[in-house]
Length: 180
Image 1 (tube, one colour):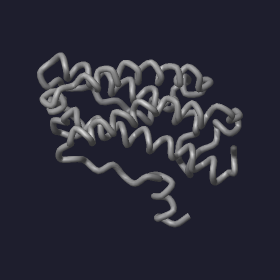
Image 2 (tube, rainbow, N blue to C red):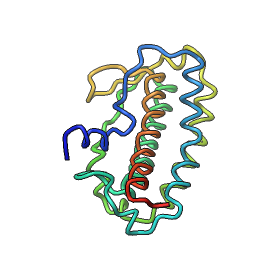
Image 3 (cartoon, rainbow, N blue to C red):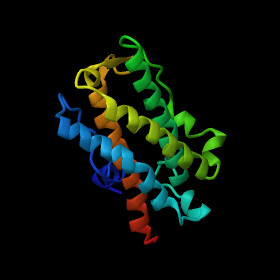
Image 4 (cartoon, rainbow, N blue to C red):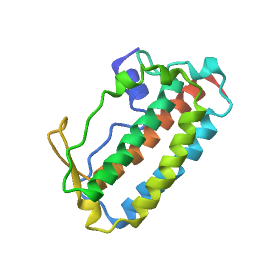
C-alpha cells in the first residue's frame, strides 16, 4: 500500500483544519452535523455482523466496533469539556490516551451501549450548542497536550469533522468490502 493510499484510508475526508473564526452559519452547520451523527452511525452499523464489526478499516487501524466505542468515549469527553468551559474560567482539561481506551475490554462489547450513549450525549450536547451566544463560543479550555487555549467554536468544528471522519471510516470500508 502506498503512503497516499494509507493516508486516504486514515483520513478519508482529509485532516482537520483549524478554523481561525466561525460565522453563525458555519457554527449552525457544524451543530447540525453533530446532531445527525447518531442517526448515521446507527444506520451504518445496524446490519453489520460481528465479523464485519471486528474488521479493521485500515492496516494497523481500529475495528469498526472500536470506532463506535471510541466515538462514545471521545464525544463524552468533549461534552464534559464544553460544560466545564461554560461553567469555569478557562479550565485545564484532562487529556486521555484514546488508543489505550480503545484497547479496554468495553471496546469488545456489542456496539448498542455506545450507540445509546452517543444518542444521549448528542441530544444534550446539541441543546447546549444551540443555546450558545457569540461570546460563549469564544470561551475556551486549556488543553495541556496542545499547549494552548482551544475556543469552543474550534472544538465544535473539530467534532463536526470527527463525526464525518469516523463515519467515513465505516462507509469506506463497507464500500470497499461491498457490504450493504
